[in-house]
Length: 254
Image (cartoon, rainbow, N blue to C red; front, side, top):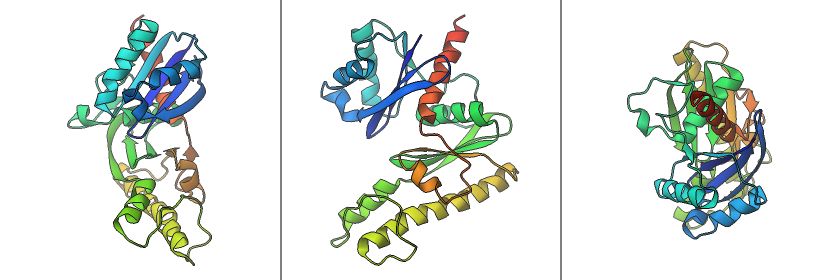
């Protein structure tokens, strides 16, 4: 009994195979593959030509959403389950316009509440850095969006004549002795400072002296290092949210 899980982001599509208890394995391919006829080949290769019982997905790329539905129908003659603000189970939404919430953020919130209880905060280090908050009642209550680390450093490279393109990693100390090191300090330590202050403000807002903060996404492990405000790192959080969504949908159907 397995479900194919698809988290379709602006840059990459994170694909996973979910079982009754956990995400069994995962991989990535570029989201652009949905538009150049390579996605179906990637999915077949990931599954080793096995046929999934179901497909559950979330997408922040509307053009890709249509392609996903078509591909799933063509490959396996089944309909894909899409996680949205209207279909997410077991998560209340205290937000003025629920349809504007990114479905990947709802998947993160669903998984975080299930794993860590409420209140809880998720920090997702993707193309953007997003904070998502589940309040004491178990409702998605809102969030925060900041530019992602890679987007910020790439912008500096593109908009300035002398700043290089860098690979983000742990800097050697706090004082940069080269342009690259100075950029790394600004990115890594700077984002740690950003997160530390925002978590402090969220604790005040929620009236929570102790607040689980879960990091996920590409740079989650790096930034969580040396940052005690982040209490857990869960690289597969979004896929786990999709797996829980699938389970909730199965129960609802009887």
